[in-house]
Length: 142
Image: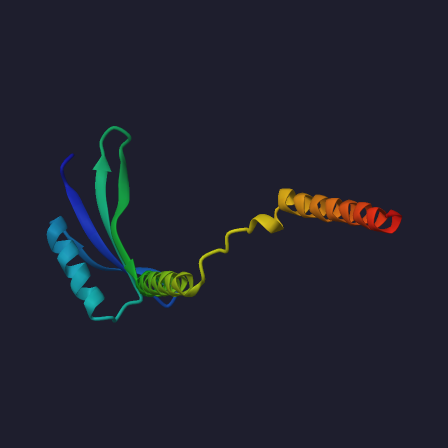
């Protein structure tokens, strides 16, 4: 009796799970469950495997298949959201590539705009001022 397993199809209607069919064959139970899902008559459905546990002397039950309208809807929404996200990423990448192509290359900093260049300019102006004063004193004293 250890290999005697049965399969039940349960449907969810009016807030309660109800047994719709019993099967001795797992494949047949799954096939019928998928056919019932395609009819869209039930919002949720599950197939359970029932068997006798000789060691503990109790019946065991485990769900081997489940499907419901909410899960299908959530999966469709997730797939659509992923597609929109993928399209947005591609569009963003194309837009950024166009913007980078339009941008002018970064200007190289001219020597006169660096700290060293500014210091040399200041030193040159100071030296020209000193020379101009010296020449004026030479001309005035002669």
